[in-house]
Amino acid sequence: MTHPSSIGRTAAPSAAERAYRHLKQAILEQVHPGGSLISEGEIAEATGVSRTPVREALLRLETEGLVRLYPKRGALILPVSAREITDVIEARRLVEVHAAEQVWPRRAEIRADLAARLAEMRAAHAAGDLTALMAADRAFHATVVDAAGNEILAELYQRLRDRQLRMGETTFRLSPRWADMALTDHAAQLAALDADDPGPWLATVATHIDNAARALRGLR
Image 1 (cartoon, rainbow, N blue to C red):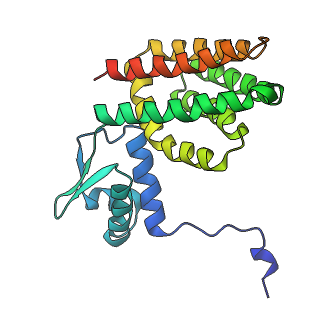
Image 2 (image 1 turned 45 degrees about the vertical axis):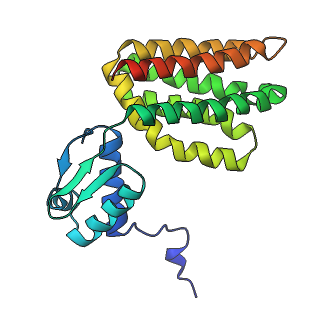
């Protein structure tokens, strides 16, 4: 029988999971920038776990393409490459433009959500809160993709999030004007939902992706 006090509880993450989450967040937020080398000991000390779960976490991150392991030396944080930028932008274009086409007949259903995400972006930008700004930005895009109703594409887009987050962190930090451009682009997308045909809406979605590509490539 399940004890009443255990109902609704969520199992605590394992030591390997804690190490994985800690290091992944540090990589995505550029605490450990691309090209830096970190040791198992550093990670173990930071997370309060032994080296065995740290190794498990590093192996998992290696399969995701975020680190490269060097026995007895540690893990190299892989920098974002020009090829990765090109691949991610291409994948974004395929998924997001298709999703934008699919949601047009039901655009009234997502308009309020997109307006709320844009308001969150503006508030975060005004407060200088980069983390909240990026979260709202990702949520704006995910709202459109999820509303398209294709679970496989939504899952693919979800897997792109980590790569997008790391690239987005670099863009927002190193290109101060990018935040203003992103706000302008999203405002244009929201306004385009009020048009009589999907042309302006699809154009603003594609333009935003093109602007992101230029910003990312300009940092290399």
